[in-house]
Image (cartoon, rainbow, N blue to C red; front, side, top):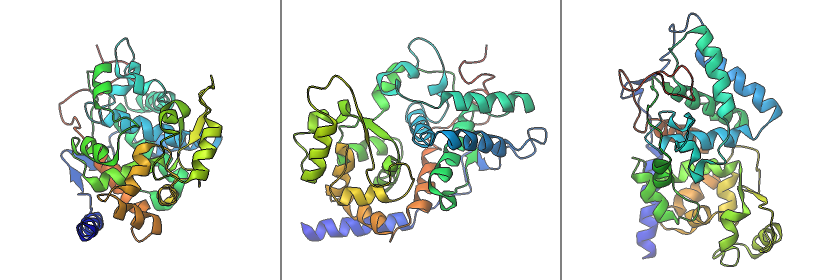
Length: 321
């Protein structure tokens, strides 16, 4: 059994080393907006808006990562999460704490002034998230964003509730959920590395505070103090207790130290299918910066609308009439 697990780990690492992103994915391409926005640098415009927000609020990094993930996992990366209204994705329980909408609105407003009806809300999300990751982790996290997405016309809370994986999944369940979106086990480990920044709340982990299998006892004691059973306050908890505000590979080091906060996180270090990848990312023998960028590009291509599909919304909050 041990030999089988070791072989599986070698295969997982080999597949990671071979991960490459093609120059185009469908009709998406790097530099899609070049020369299409009346001399306005579309990506530069978004970058400046993200940088200004980051300067006063570093939590915009996990906010945009979560926004992008929650958009792509429901009907694909089509900005359907941005649409206002009763019964839309925004109103689904998993999305009630999603943030960053105002930043996307700000970028959209500025770009609409420069070139009306050209830049999609879906592309703004993808570009802004990349820029936030670079600000949170450094230039080594730079990756080229493929653009050319169009915006979706449908947004249903029921779709969000059905498609967004919960925090109580184990590693094999998470792998299955990601695989349903065309993402391999290796991509699952990399994309969960977004938990290198951001927080969860006691309400999401309280049910396992007294059943933290494979977790450092001192860490469990700290969590119990932070999340008492009888508290009426839903305190926040850092997902990465090493460097909680920096995009880096500390998340994987924390998992190996048995300090994973969410069940799915700690389980990555315990499951034979993912343990080898976690170890390699923690040690640096696999480059988290470059591989995380590849994984973000891969996620950003899920079920995209291109060409004549969908529309370019005038406002990210409403479908064009």
